[in-house]
Image (cartoon, rainbow, N blue to C red):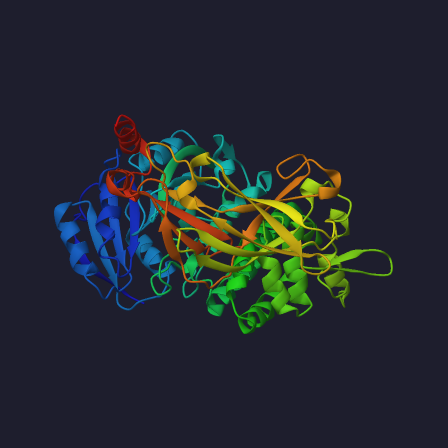
Length: 567
């Protein structure tokens, strides 16, 4: 694939810049100026900016040319045809980059002002192959900022070989790093093309080949996340509903395995890579299973299970039990149950029922496993569901029906499954809790027996009764249900209480009710992971305008709180 030079504002005869920042773009005319502006605003001025356009069909070429006309540090490349990924536009830009150090930026993200200065400064006086820094994740719907893999950037250090810190394989981004160009060329290190998740392979190779690299604690990349983007505009990582997406991720994982084997890395590095795949890559798809139909789950199992067979037993031993249950159900071909189990991932949710074999071992679901692998994955004996402390017992609270009452209430019909028969066969006292802005709203209810190990009840929740701070509240909360072991006394909320999430129907139509003051509350399914019931508070009036998504953080939001608090 050839590359067409569209605009070359930096003269060939001028002194070479110190850093080249490659900005890749495809059909993103709206956000490209923001990304480029963040590079132009760098405190390090001696930079070259290469806009690499993956054959956009919107106004991107015109916008890119206009940007180049404004700053002679900008050059624009345009691929003759669309590559469908990030690898080709990055590689083509690398062919023309003039600086001894290189960074990468996506058109929908930004660099903090000191990113280049900090990363280049870490190279000074040290023989490093690359430097890397922390990443800020910004939600586009709320403006909330959170650190990415914060534990990996808690202290500054120089790593001399990935075997010294294999856990860094959990951080696969290529964009929060500044590479020495000589290092990339010496190892012919380029991005794979025609394949998604190219960052993972590129970064695994960089970690493994580098003699030394330095990790900084300061943020050097601002990554914008659009959690509710439409499927046709979502980023690659948000297109997990495509089986082709699954195939690409597994293909990349296999290529990483092959590379690590070629390099003869220690077993600890391979185990960490396997652990990362199981606890991160596989976990992402597993969390989506409740939202997939059984046929999709069957296809997913056919793609992923053969790859899992080659992963290390030590990595499987580090998996959370609820994650291993999902794998076991896929291995057993129990696809509908796999969707059911996936709804509780990370939330301590139990099964609807248990099965016990002749040895007294307890397994997920009402059917004994058929295979040795299934038995290993589905064995819950270690959790001691029947004898563990009541507060740690695993119940399953499902919402059968969600409705809007005429009086502004949220009406819920609930069913609780008690798989280990911990609860007496009698009316069950319970409490529904929701805590907007850290202020708990509690509604009592009664759950009546509806069969052995099953209880049902109804409750009305009035969001308008919640006490909110004077400056208002914007955010999402997930109600929880607390039940009591009546045989031990103490009453709901006492020492005998057990609190668990509420699993909502996955497809009920969201609706809105009144909240306290001028707030509105949207009642909806969570949309991802467990599909919990979700309440989204949104202030109205002047509070809503001052606490909108664009000012969720920082001095503007604090000033808004202070202003409203004085009224």
